[in-house]
Length: 96
Image (tube, rainbow, N blue to C red; front, side, top):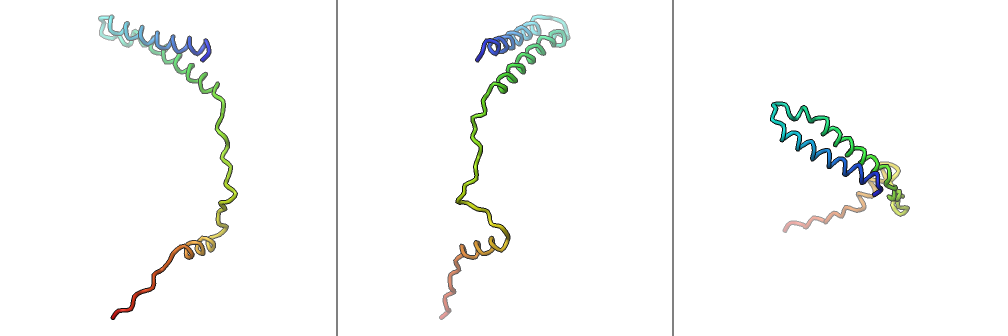
């Protein structure tokens, strides 16, 4: 985590705490609407932190390569042959 990331995360938490304090300390009816801009600053810092975090992540996921041993059937008749070969039918027992 770089210095700017730490500052953005700290500012986000700090603005949120200040916004809560302003909301609960004010005795007016619309105290949340008066401290709304502080909450928006908190969200702005949090979103900037998340964007920087995603942008700095290296893509370490290897690309999935198809397995050469597994081949997809080319047409429906191949599928039918494979399913009939895999189904084993028991012979019926004669009735006494």
